[in-house]
View (cartoon, one colour):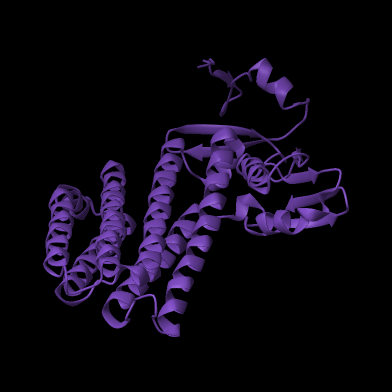
Length: 345
């Protein structure tokens, strides 16, 4: 930490000297105007113009000898590290071009600007300084709630077996599609937060202290994990063959999880620590109820031995186990959301 002594200048002004290393790094010259941003815990000084001027950072990704999955990881890494121009090159990239463009279009704000037989160039067209992390969190919450609600609809109203009707299958596919929207928002929020933690000027534009950025990141991670579980549960339901009493109990458990999630996010928006404490303290009993359901359902499956085909019993037991595992993870990350709320000032 650097320390500077305040010097009186005239009747009403005070001055401090700037660190030489910072002056050289930002190419500060005599007569330059600096921006001052008041914060709760201090005063942030930034180079004038640098906040609004966009300095493009470019990176080149070689596609030669690489599978599309590896190229995807490198593009994602460049995006999350706030590179504005990503150039994918290769001796004959045409066979991978469609896949590469699909990866690029899956990242918010990234657009293909140029494509030839040897390269695909993408540029980030978003102004990160105009993006609100709170708005992203609220959008992720809305989508996640809709995924949970549609999962409940599947349990209550759809005959979710392999021969399920077209409407039910469409609902499952739609839940999976919304998970992609969640992922796009997650990567965008990660990019903004990571950029702000690396650049104090970007943080000043977001008007967020490092602790706030960390809390926001923890929230978006937990929302993304919960949405992932909804996608998995929606995929498992058509193969689970869960019926009768087990179906009713599973629906009630999912409804309870949805209520807990809704209460937790409401507590987040209102900074209600009492609700957060209640959610966290009760998590163990929720997990116990889920485990008891699986035990009871397995017992019912065993009792049906000889009345149903072995394959039907296997699907029912294994499907229920996967669904309950997803619900337990949802309960866990809802509890983790509550912990963030508890830690908020």
